Image 1 (spheres, rainbow, N blue to C red):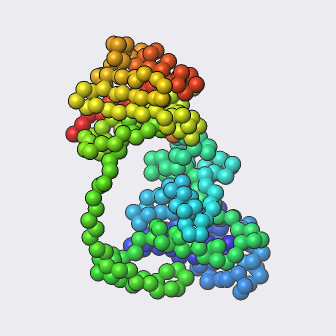
Image 2: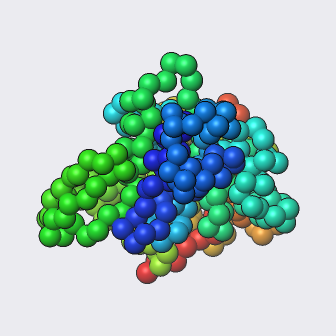
Image 3: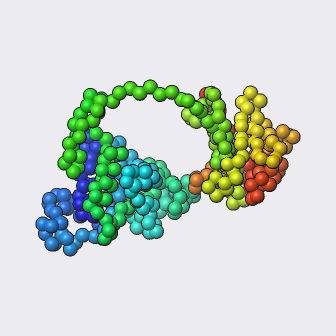
Amino acid sequence: SFEFVNRLATLKHSNGEPAVVIYGTWSKIATDIKAAQYTVSSTTKWHRQLPGPTVAFNIVRSDASFVGYNEVAKLASLNKNPLQLRTGCFCNPGACQSALKLSNEEIRNNYLISGHVCGDQIDIINEKPTGAIRASFGKDSLWEDMDSLVTFIEKMYIQHESSMHGKSKTTSNGHATFTKPVQPINAKISELYIFPIKSCAAQRVKKWKITKSGKFLFDREFALVDTSGVAMRLQAYPKMGLLTPSIDIEKMTLTVKAPGYEDLVLKLNNKCNTSNGVACSKANAKPVKVCGNRCGGEVCGGYDAAEWFSSFLGVQCWLARHTAAKAS
């Protein structure tokens, strides 16, 4: 843990900005040890003062913006060999708030406005982290485990000098490496898909319109929502993968196919009618939670569509539509 903290403290981007923020007692000790150039073996005094073998930290980009802890944990799990990190507030929201220097108002707004709760995937709100990354070392941990984690952070998140012409750099463990010149890459899109309804099957298209915000038109604009107002996900409802939605831009319709069921056809006008003319209205507006985020949604297709989806999936639900986006 001592060596891990010592090496984290030396990680800097090419512009001199620190790449890691360390929290808790380890943060002060890392600063003191670095200034005094102590090592664990050089004095028993420092050894007695060391905290436990858990280190909480966050990674910072060269522009001082935070990297989301969920991103770090997921990429670490794909590392070779995989690295397992705990993230979030570690079942201690009070200490988490104190370490991250979040005000009571910010904590309230994170919940009331962004819908953030413990255990969700929301790791950055208003450019501030909602939790941290924790590395724990035990009796079975090896030096190589610690070294692998530091190397992973260096490889994935440390910005070095431009490698356009090829430059050498030295890592925190003293090894010199050489970056190859960056070569232009020609890429071609071989297949293009959109997902009209979140967590349902994709629609393959040859070309598609892009909205002013940069997203595909109608992509994930619809979601199936349960009775508590939470968007349903494929992981919890596997039969959603059998629902095949398709958008016809010329006819402005959404057609949904399901095995053993007649096609459901919805008209994509501002009122989101079904083919038989049943419409939704502003009175049917409901708050919807998608991945913990609250957003506005309207019941789409009315009772007929809700009954069609509920019957196929075997759970009471309704089709919600996010605020329509305009194509550029």
